[in-house]
Amino acid sequence: MDVRIKWVEGAMFLGESGSGHVVVMDGAPENGGRNLGLRPMEMLLAGMGGCTAFDVKNILDKARQNIVDCVAEIHAERADTVPAVFTKIHVHFIISGKGLTEKVVARAVNLSAEKYCSASIMLSKTVEITHDYEIIETDVE
Image (cartoon, rainbow, N blue to C red):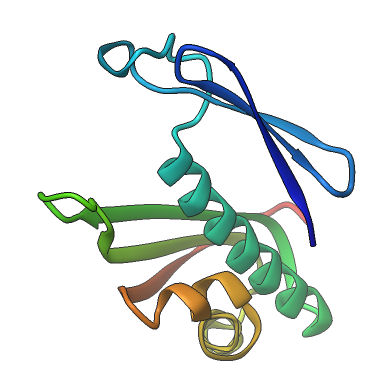
């Protein structure tokens, strides 16, 4: 896997993935940025969230759960000193669907956290990561 980061101006950088996609990262104005993109640490958190949400949805699909939405809300705390690493990350899943089985949803969240999500598992070596979920019953199939 390869990524190329190119400085644009101020605190703005473009990240180009080996698969050809581009994202903008930028800093806050007080750090020379124009606030036109995600901060690099936000990008890291979003990557982890995308990884685990993908896993949970995929596991629920394979378990034939009728889901209509899967949201991962992530809250992270950072150290007050440099380096301002993540010290705690909490992932709250909101799974919506019809006739969802709580046991299956819990299993999907745990499998992602403990077996499948490379990003979560890697970060958990140095950061306390917790998960929970809520299920929203819908009439939509």
